[in-house]
Length: 141
Image 1: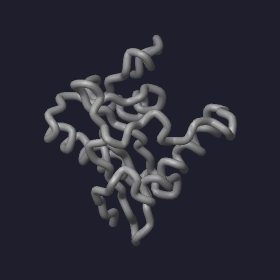
Image 2 (image 1 turned 90 degrees about the vertical axis):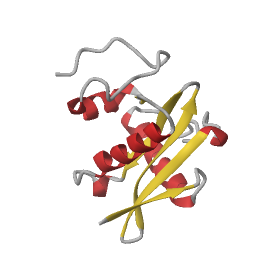
Image 3 (image 1 turned 180 degrees about the vertical axis):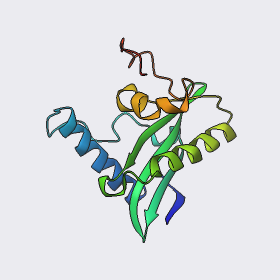
Image 4 (image 1 turned 90 degrees about the horizontal axis):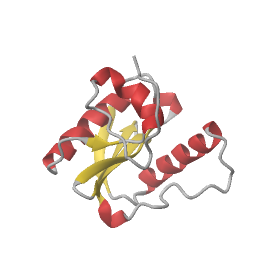
């Protein structure tokens, strides 16, 4: 059973999971090994909440919410490969959506690449992308 806990953005488990995410994305998208650190560009003061999921004391999932102007942005959502396929991402997303609503958000921002395809089944309002990340893409059916 996964236990979800709120941690500081710089919590060791959260940092380790973001590093794993960064390494996976670097490999997936062919980025060089010296690509920016996973937390580059994130002001820790803007982070509203970071949640880590643990199974038997092992960190298996994490994500953060940060303030982005009047909106809230979902940052660095990650589930370790060995824990995928068990619905952890959906659990984590539900928890983060509830937290975002508590902070007054009516939508959240996510980068489009995998989020669009992975969360499209939840409806078109689930994924909203930044204008500076948006590129024309074919519709997800």
